[in-house]
Image (cartoon, rainbow, N blue to C red):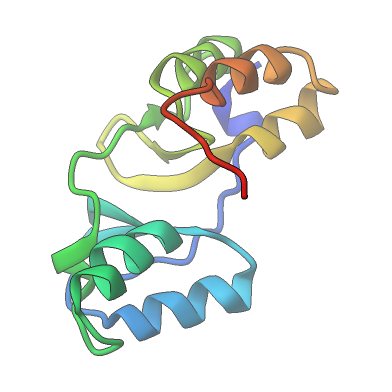
Length: 143
C-alpha cells in the first residue's frame, strides 16, 4: 500500500506572513494541531499548536505575531508513492505522528497521520510506531 492510499489530500495551508491568531483559528475550526506553511506553492515549514503556545505566547509574541517567526522550518516529509509500512516505521524512528506528503516535484499533496494509517490498515504497524513515538523521557512530577 502506498502513502497516497491513506493520506488526507485536502490540507489547510498557511503562509509565513499569516498571524498566529489566523493559524490558531484555522486549527480550531478544523480540529487539528498542525498546519503546513507554504510560500509560493513550496513547503517551507510546519506550525503546530505547541509552536504557537511555546515559541509564540511563551516568548511574548501576541496573536498578531507572524507564523514565520515560530514555525518549525526543518520539515520532515514523505512522498505519496512511498510504501506505507516504510513511512509508518520512519514516523516511529523520528518520533512524529504526522507528516506532510509531497509528490516527486516536491509539491504538497496531502498529510498523513497515524490515525489515517490505522484506518486503512486496521491498526497494523501503528502500535509499533506509536510505541517508538511516545518514548518516556525526562523527569515528570505529579503533584
